[in-house]
Image 1 (cartoon, rainbow, N blue to C red):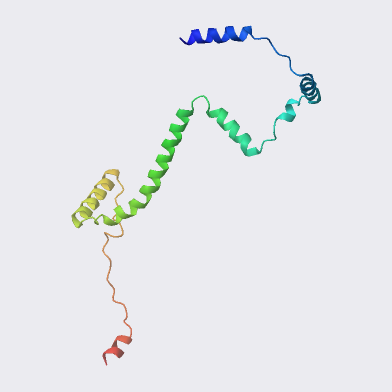
Image 2 (cartoon, helix red, strand yellow):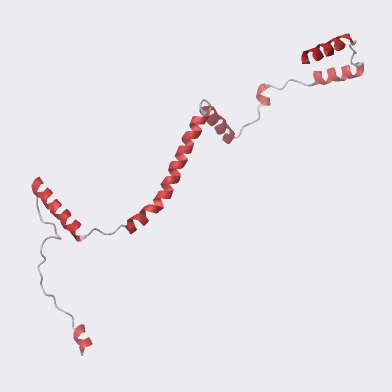
Length: 147
């Protein structure tokens, strides 16, 4: 149906005589085109700022696979967000953990001694050595407070 209408329209159009453009219009149009000089290619190009040049180069770099680059950028943003969100949680987790019990500390010291014996250089750590008690002179302030 559409083809029939198009054929009829074309037949009516071909039967109509062509009209000439008025002479004064024709002269005005031709004068305007003669007066217009072609713009050189370098002049047509607007001067780009350095930011737009970088943007153009960046888009040319990413053009082959923009979805892959966008996905990679999204993954990096997710990693940074998770990193900064976890940074605040670690001190709270460390504060909540209980100090090791005395049994655990004794067991760790025994393991250190065993390891040192196996390696062959066993020296008792400073904390395990007995400290020699020597009384030190007391100040006279205590006597003044008592009397």
